[in-house]
Image 1 (cartoon, helix red, strand yellow):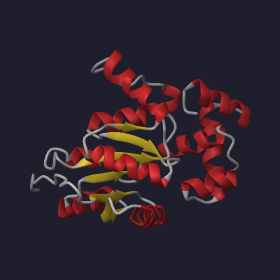
Image 2 (tube, one colour; image 1 turned 45 degrees about the horizontal axis):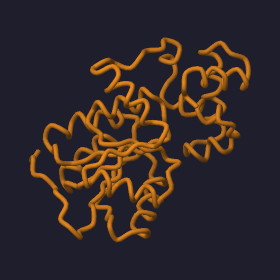
Image 3 (cartoon, helix red, strand yellow; image 1 turned 90 degrees about the vertical axis):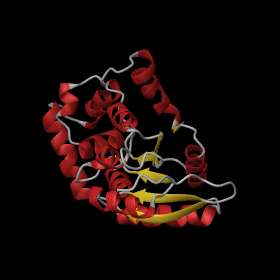
Length: 227
């Protein structure tokens, strides 16, 4: 890999590379970004860690929009492989997850910011430009996680919860949306999975947590700051 930088020149658009394992989301995000502003241009996209690493090395974007959870390692693995060789590339995590452990993991890995997929398209454009210009950007609720991890307890790892650790990343995503009051159909749409898959994940979460209903799951998720 080359360590060549990709500094932004005044007046030039920010070059962006999209990393997300859902093709439909990438297509929508790309269309939105390119239609809203001449200040951002998408130079590539990838749906896996392997594709992401190869694409980022090839295109050398200024900003990478990085999904946190992917089947072959996720955003943290992309950071691990790219950061040492291309330190000038800026990473902005964009995820459905707002769990503290996810936020802290990618920030420790070198991401410059973390926003959730509830962000508006215009705010996402602003966030991209800000991180390209050197700012750190976080969705409002997430900044506290970063302060807790890096200011109050410098160098300390995130607190482990043995019960929470039993859940897969996708089960946590489903639980988080369920606890917010989403219907199964809405969860399926948000996560680009089938309603049957949502039901399977909920059943698995109920079994692992030894809880019996949605109300108990919501309270359990709230107690662990997943909501």
